Amino acid sequence: MSENKGKVYRPKDLETLVFEWGTQQWLIGKNFSLGLTVIPPGTEHARHSHPGVEEMFYVLSGVLEVIFYYGDKEERYEAPPGSWVHIPPGVEHSGGCISVEPARFIVIYSPPGPETHQLRNSPECTVLPPGKLPSYTCK
Image (cartoon, rainbow, N blue to C red):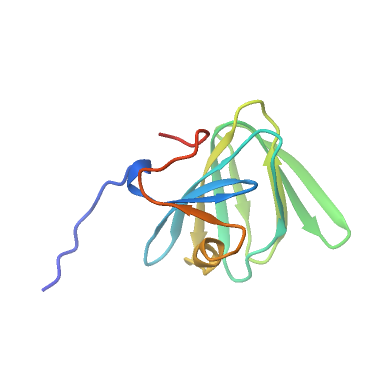
């Protein structure tokens, strides 16, 4: 009989994915993926979408600019701390940190899509082992 037990993770317990646009740490469950993303000031994440995967952010600190693309039209929003951002499946979006401090936010994917594995295995990604954190991530 297998045990179903809870666990507490700290940032130092997880590997960190490092990109030109920031860092991510992930926990992947059966029904969703949960990640901490940090984007340094003045840095942007390129336009992209997640077909079949719903995405939400909760902004912890810093200010994000979030851009949604609908054909030739775009909608821009500022997301300060305490903001929730909802991105339906397949909606193209981009964003970046527009504050003087890094933007730190929780990202949720449901269902847990291939994004986390694709990001980890992309040539733009450097994987730091647990316990190794860039200077602008949470400690």
